[in-house]
Length: 98
Image (cartoon, rainbow, N blue to C red):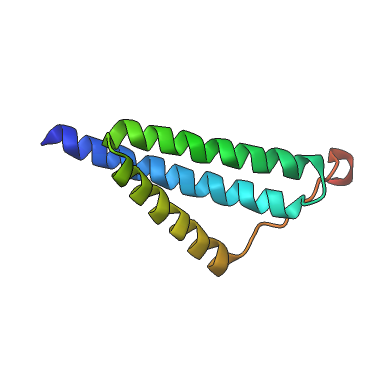
């Protein structure tokens, strides 16, 4: 019973982490659309999705529940992006801050 509870808590926090990372990387990829940094953000986002998939596959042990968790998180990400929008970012040299 304790093992299932700890596994559920771990899945919850990994899913929350995945949601935050995916939202941030997607926002940066949109913000730096025509820049090399935007391409790096897209590649990092793909890597984060594959890492999440392998982690959930290890925790659940089945392809079905892994795909269900991935679909739910991508739907939550879409709802978050639709509701909040994206983070507008730009490179600012430290000399311009002061």
